[in-house]
Image 1: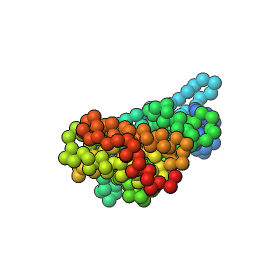
Image 2 (image 1 turned 60 degrees about the vertical axis):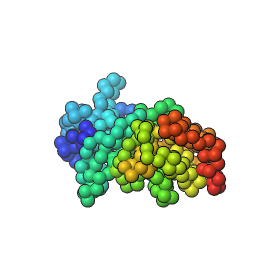
Image 3 (image 1 turned 45 degrees about the vertical axis):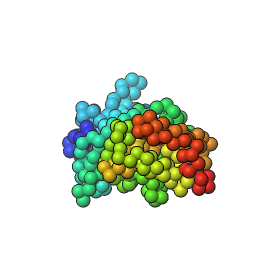
Image 4 (image 1 turned 90 degrees about the vertical axis):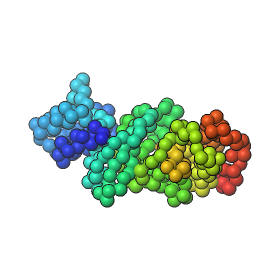
Length: 295
């Protein structure tokens, strides 16, 4: 269970009003002044101070006292806001164990009110490489220095858009359910990451299915993953691929799309040749993937 889920039960509606006010204020401030929070929350100074102190003790916000007193959301505070919204919308009932952690996100298993097991992905853009961060920022626009929470929200929105489009074209990706802030809820990701799969019953078949997934994304959906490797392909229990981690995708018409596509395919072919002894030429694979593309 995440730290945000643990403190959620201790928070009242007014606490979330304060958290939302800080979130709103962070559109223009790194640390939101108390005066601005009073205006946004409509709380009396004493009441606001009490709730800010409580949220600070829970570790949801951070205080700065320099030329003015200001407050900013910590990661766990933003997590709490997203979980509160998803719970109130009837999307998730309970958050369970962590399924994975990486440079881009934390992923947890969750249960819906209908008792469906789903995956809840919290984007952490601050853990992205500089290259990926720069690529995502090209979609943010001119905002000076965007906050981490805004960038993470953009990453979640882009991944949800990609998954929605890819699923409509029958690509092997998780089923997107909803996104809120920096969180994407999707169908449960079950299986093992490709990089731990040293032995497979039919590696040639699996490689063909992965390349077909890349082809569908490029030729049918018009997008390129742009960071594909053995680390973001899951091999399901019935030995089919699931391609995950799409926030950095680029459209097929992007000036660098073909270079990203070539690198993606090369990464996969290199892994299969080195670890699974399956050898396929890069040119042959790319020819198959791009043959029916109209980009």
